[in-house]
Image 1 (cartoon, one colour):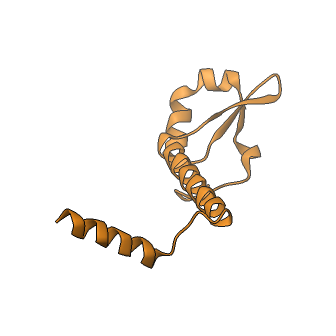
Image 2 (cartoon, rainbow, N blue to C red; image 1 turned 90 degrees about the vertical axis):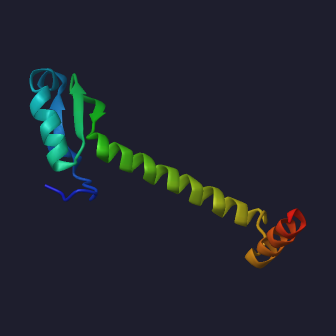
Length: 100
């Protein structure tokens, strides 16, 4: 069992056939909330779907969004599409002064 927010890479223990999902939906939902680990659903012995607690799903989506932002920032740095912070703040101050 992992603590909330921790990532478990041992997914093999959380693999169930689709019939188990159909027969035990209430138990699965309760367990997902308690453990915070995803459940792999198989059909004909092959992984076909992942069932995940909504809070964990939201955390995963937030993490992916942050990683995309970091990647974009790194790419902009590599392409030289950045300006020193001092230059940006100076420009903002000038614009603000002109508005007043």
